[in-house]
Image (tube, rainbow, N blue to C red; front, top):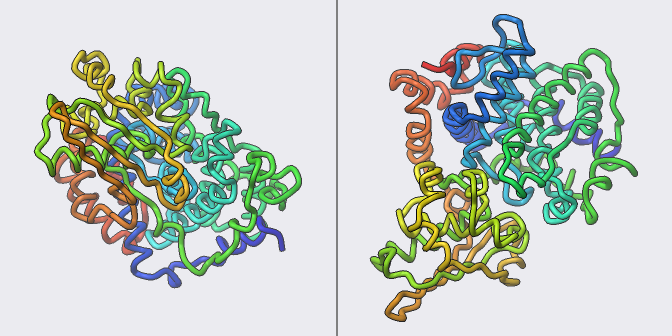
Length: 459
């Protein structure tokens, strides 16, 4: 049995009954985070454009919920919209080892499939665990730095497989049909890193397209459409086509012994994950030493090598971001707003701050260096180092081994609820938010996901 078939068999056999309370709780934790970021993300102009497109091409009344809106659409279009919205704020969850955002691809497909199949909460939890497992294992097997170097975005490429696995599980596909769904997804996996050059919206589309592709793959497979049974490991399969240094063994080693969903990080800051550790260090130094922005003369940040072409280079673009998207991937911008405002939330990633002379001047004091000692721990850890020199010559140093939100330094349930409340408040009423939190925290008891999804339309 090859790797693709082994993974399909794992997904097919996975049952809610074999999941520990800790795994079930983690799915619910990640689900609430996804719902918050996708709800607020629905307010972005890029999300409005996606909904406008869906309205034009999908004339059917009813269908699956498009979170944060009055629109309902066919399952694959709802998955597209919800995935694009969830990734638009750079606040969605992260798998460090696969360098991907599994929630934004897996949850939209799982939610749409669950509505389509009138599935219950237990089935949704099963599907999410399977989808995360497939997507993250595939990302690790690619070797993220090599995948990036080839110009691919792991969330888009690996996300199609994770979404296909989740949708297949909920739709009740057989083991052979699940193999076909993965095989079909392999011909739809896409996501170019060229978005970095101009601050365009396409990165936001990547997990939406992955969720859409996964739904299409599962629906085709259910009808008998076939796909290659060696799509992952084959001579022309995904690993060899998308990486110069794949590690195929990571696809299946220890499969079923533990679950990747337990090793996913949440974001406290509205920007690329490569920026989160340095921001943690900056805020720590500023707070512990009662520093104010005028005290800061220079800042030197130790950045992972894999993050350099994403948040540090090219220098001219990163030190003069023109759009909010470019700012989300600019380490100097993120450092500057953290120093000036003591935060790096949605309220700091604004058009006004892009034009702010104060922010621009502070960015000039930021420098970024590559540190081989940090790289030695990557990708299992995403550490960072920070050095701040004050105008009176004092020097402060911080090392961040596990950025806030990592499993080793997690946000509490109370903090996740607070994040959800802050993001969802402009979209849902207080009563709706309270009920969403309550239903998510008892997700396994949902007799049919439609009751929860009905709460996700805009108030």
